[in-house]
Image (cartoon, rainbow, N blue to C red; front, side, top):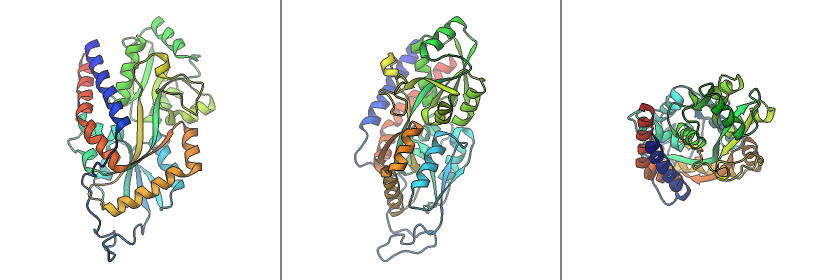
Length: 346
């Protein structure tokens, strides 16, 4: 068990290193060159989709309302110069909605908000043999959303030490929520539990998405949970949720008083880089229009402040860099999932 966890930790830390260094040219797998026809078939003299967008662009949010992806999508839409509307399509921890986007017509009128690791995880975890992360061109990434270990006000815990002390004194009594039965959130939680010395003393309870996990935490169905900061922002603001530890290397601007995993001595931090992806075959000129739009969104001061207030860290990375990162990271992420499966079997 300890050996397997150590191997997973090494692989995950390597993924973090690649993520921090990703860049360069990359390629949008499945993207076609400019000159394809637009939704109504019109093509300008230079081959561009001159009339795009002539209709409202649907942004699929493959999770329930109120989660991190939903929050990003709606804030970005509010700051967008292009006509967009968010549509929540839930199911299978994000797979159903993402697959619907994947199968949509590549005309620029359907895109999806997702995290790079979740998009990769659908395939490398074995949930589908469709290589969506390889086929769907990335438009951009807009925010980093770090995980946080949090409790609810009913427990009375105010520090990570309070929680660990209680768990050790009451093994088997505390339920710990996490999004998904496996994946990067699960991997991060596994590492934290091992470092805190309570891996065998809590009950892991997986949920479909962040909003369901938040509901469970607020209702005290779980007493502690690993959720992204953005998913917890409302509960933290109301005082119903108490963040004990943010899974990041540095303190987050919105919560300067909450300690980080790095300063607490834990070996790993978990994050979700959230962005937008298009169906395979979406023309390059349409991708460029969408990318330019979101780059402008990223510079919007109201949008940036809203992201900071939610606990997100605003970023902007172009799709080619995101595609290149996913291609490079796939073998190591596949190993992470293989090791997680081994840990689950043990």
